[in-house]
Image 1 (cartoon, rainbow, N blue to C red):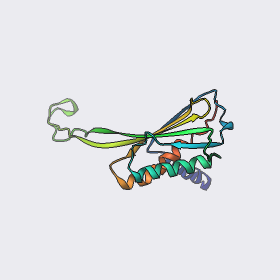
Image 2 (cartoon, one colour):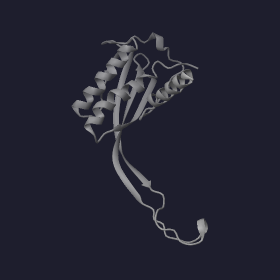
Image 3 (tube, rainbow, N blue to C red):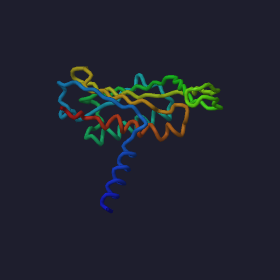
Image 4 (cartoon, rainbow, N blue to C red):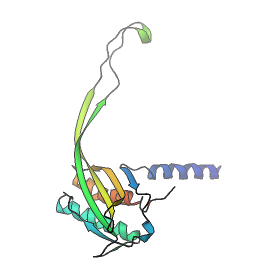
Length: 175
């Protein structure tokens, strides 16, 4: 019995911890030899972030690339392009009808009211492109969205998390 309870608790914990608030996806070129890439250089031409968030993104990205065995270099195998954007999101929510119900059972007449409300917020995304420095072709791309742009405390926590989630898919596992 204790064994079953332990298994149930372990699977519940795993299920809760594996849920991510972010939407992350990646794609790669089938022809790329990811084992041949040893060095990288980050290019931030399109990284339109404030200096605080830019440092967070670049520091975490460098940490993730180095954990994958890549080293920063001036004559790199990979050029890393980082981009960020955000969009305005409107959520529309509606509650179930409530109120007084009249005669006739479940199919009779009565009065019921719905409540509908909207919430507006900004959601951010980070795009990481890895470009083969020799061929100048994109070999891998990771995209993560779902960052709470409007909350500085959330961004402080979420940027490292989303960078880790994005880079989890590099190098790609070929099927």
